[in-house]
Length: 577
Ligand SMILES: [Zn+2]
Image (cartoon, protein in one colour):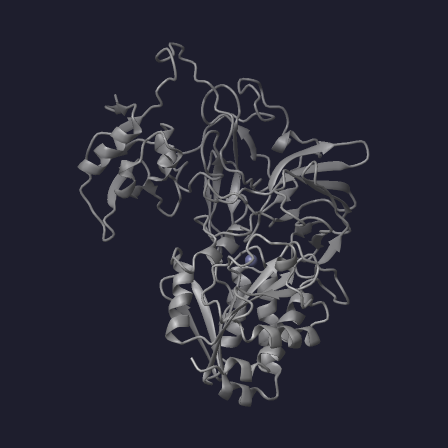
């Protein structure tokens, strides 16, 4: 018999854990133990009333990411020290005391908004892991080493040179879309159902996959298991002439009180759709101003060359809809051609060993910087504070291309030093966010009050090096032409000449500040590092293909124009101090 001590108050359990915990780390976190891992808990949250919703943030996650939530749901037992008795939380009944019935009520929903269908095999599908009599837990092989066969035999697979695959479940009433690698260490022996919600006592018929209850020949067709991937696959509907794929953009972890929760980024792969008539619809999109009007989805067969596809937008229904009949087996769709941390890494490798180039990683953050030249004019160029605005990274690519092909580079090197920060928010990029880092913070509102480690690291370098001009590269979802904005127009000496020169080199650039005209949300309130030295360059992400072969070439061309412009700003930048 287990000697579990049960707690019906989360606060009491937390307090006990804190009081009895023995080991303390350098940050003052204490160590607690669960059946699988050790966790660190923080004191600062101890005062939190258990009724508030952030009670589930009290455990500092270990890398596998199980949170306080699992303890809260009674799923995990904990102890404060080794050895010790297991403590377990159980949710108090709302009214009338505890129920007498033994039968567990089925938890139906997983709290993760993100869906990963996993590898397609006959084992993938709905299981009754919670043991309630019906199947609400979705299990499948995930990871990089491919599917591993029957999970009854093994739950981990490792291929040479690749990271592990593991049998993982999106458990009902839990937060994450994956269970940990160690979760089924002792074996997986659960009943599979033909479809979601089915009685698990019914015999299993055939090997059809049951994802989403769709009728699409039993196949799941949407995947996002790659960097910057973002979409929730809600369901497939087989119609007379096509298959309707219903999708939603994943919610970003904004703080509750954020009024405008921008989340435009999506990026997913549609599998096994060759010569099939498909209609895709993204429902429940967040609509602000002009953001979606005139927007056309980007698609690619090779994940490199991108084109647009005619897309209809309904403001009333909050939907984006497009039809597509693929000529290839698989097709990618995205808000804009993606630029991932892996691509950034490749770019760093390509340039960092060139003559006159230095590379560094700023502080403890994962933010990289490339330093070009050794002239007295220190110029900072930062992209991807907002992770979804991938056009900024393409501008960096263009800037570097132009710099390294400039025959005058030797002269430029002696005048300027460029500090290029190609990706200010790598975590947000990995997660497929539009606007925030992994904690839901907007970096572009964090400069004045030092709220994020990413901006702090950049700010430190800028201060050290006495930046004379700071170009902040963004993408805008509303405008149809690229433009420049700044904090205080009148005080910014570079703005006007920069604007004029940029217009000469960049055909799709407008001199007018789009934000000013549209009384944009941030106009005049931008949290700039230095109001007099910051220029925000906004690439219009809705732009047409123009004459390019692939959409992102527009960003690359913009980057080239930025380079040509900035080297002509010498006399305006060279201000006293
Ligand atoms: Zn932005």
